[in-house]
Length: 327
Image (tube, rainbow, N blue to C red; front, side, top):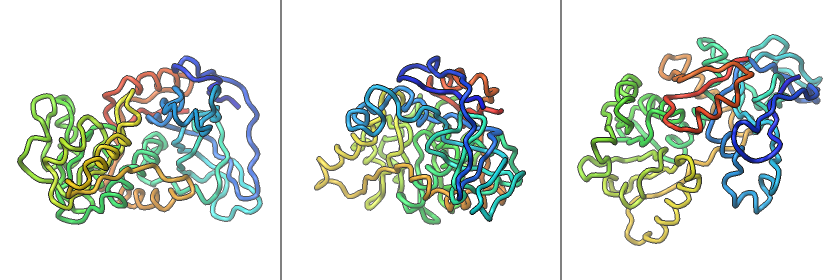
């Protein structure tokens, strides 16, 4: 089979289209033919070897990446199953969030990590869902504790995680304010935001309305600045940061700890859960999707041979929704 293999850390053109052996499913595994995948910051941070502290600690590989085939999102068709598999059979359409392997024609996935593809989505649309929607769900429900009637501010509302976060917050019954650039104001409003702040003209940390939960995806302001618009007892959830600021959420936490006696709000990180913990989250998102309450937003689609170009485009930033790759 063909796969894009990363042999060393660096730019997207180091991803090489290579012939490698097609994997054979184990007892509890399913061989899935990739129909579509998508690009995430997760991919190009690993491609660049970020954060470097993880390389020094041995988690990523010091000189060469341990994960040679990137790609965390998968939408595909079951090709073969192991003897112990009971929930799926060849021909079934499935989705999964992977640790690696999406940038290949085939990948083996444990049965427990797969969920059926949402019936009302194409493979291209479904590939936009796993990592981004799971992260948004984790940030809102598990870390933010969003409840009906809460006022939720989402900084970075037009990106992959942000577009899902706006819709999920609305589905939870919250009143949503999205922060984005001028060109994305109408998009964020169309996703259900009650209010949209254009950060190019308005400082969203200016005192005024107070928010129960702040989902900080863009990582563009300090925790102390954000505190000015948070309600007493509110929660600031750090999700990510722009290129070159991978550790921005960690800085948020350290700065919050430094002034902890002065804070009346919580500051937490929405780290992505392990693959084995994701299926139920994906099922929850699937229910919202099939109910028409959530839909993926796709910026661009690329054919499989153009994965390096897709990663390069995504890495430049300012993507509206998701960048998808179709086999």
